[in-house]
Image (tube, rainbow over all chains, first blue to last red; front, side, top):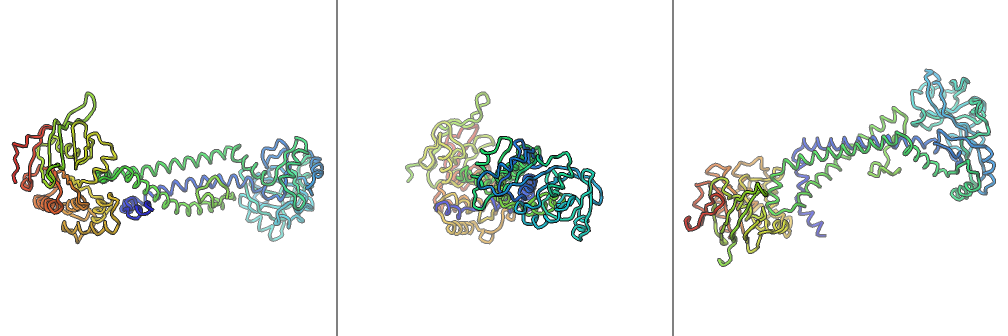
Length: 367
Length: 234
């Protein structure tokens, strides 16, 4: 109550000082906004790194995922014997188990013949419930051999290819010296490991990679019986299956991928460093602005001290200025960052989005 | 009423610097100023006038001797005590030292804001009344940059006197003004001081305003000249 009263009668000196010098205020605000944009862009790239790393695992609709024990990340999933999947079916609650083959591979742009790196997935087209609804509708198109679904969010200029697929004229290209036909579209997006995703049946996959044995699978996708608790079943599987596999719930697997991109890649560290540097730049800019302002008001401040105002009163003025600069500078930077995110998204097909958490200052959260 | 002086200085010494570089600037100063008196302090540059004034105004901490302002001993006082003691004083500087981001009214209100018992409305009323008393009722919403030198100094006087301080300290308030504005400013101070019954201690070089004093003291090389020599001119 006392605080409120003293707030009401207080002359808003910080604000009056800042607003008196319009041009200086504008420069100060653009400095703050610049630092904010710098940090938001780094956070955006970092977020995109994490998000792109997990958007492929997220597109799998499995309740539980089994991997080889030496998995590095989704793109480099170690193989394990297919027999483990049949063993998994013994565990109560597991209704269905299906192998997923995957490989990072080079391919050629169907029209320009430019080379690129894509992640090729091979899965059983009969297991519809293991995929997202939009993919499920397309599964019939890859039942025939050498048919492939194309990721329309792939990085690069694929407008002509997409148009052709939509018209029904099926473009062809080569993977491992074998001709394949792109006859359907899915949307996933690029990551830092690959330009995008190609989806084939398990049979097509094994034909494209003759050195891969059908008994060595990369991932096992498990569907649970209705009402089964995924955490419980995962624990049971973990103790039941031999040590050459690891068991993840879907959520755990996504976390595992986040952890990989965040801690094990150079890019994760680089963006974290970028954010820290943006922060330091911001601190320096704000310090400069405030120091200049204090310097140019030293005589007035001395007079206030002579009138009986305490040290805290002067600190209050500087704090008030700092808060105003921080808040007012942040708002335009948020808008500009959203615009730059949009540009980045268009140029790279990376999932650069402004999240609520980041806009609210909780950059370490993912909501 | 005359029993207790408003300012009572006894055997006051003051030095700047430390160890080898230590330089004493005030030597054995004794001075009593009674409530309602207007005392002018003259003396050459570097004689220690401003140092004595800042000690009386609690801008510095007194080191040695005794310095009683309005009955309170300030020798060796702590920062907080000094901060509080200052609120009883009105301080007027050679430069007006108005805040350039505040209007004349807001500047004068700052002289009241330091006292927690005024409401915003009371502060505004008192400050505009005070500005009217110094003849600036037409310009209360002007910024300092839009006022003349004499007007600015009048605003500074209004700021110093608005809280009705018991003690007004002025450090060459006319130095930056032409003779006519300087005269006006000092007469204004004299009139308001008499109305409010406050004590004034003013440092000045300005011979033209010596006649407003009840008493003149002279400072030279850190010694206050014996008061018997410079008798009251009342």
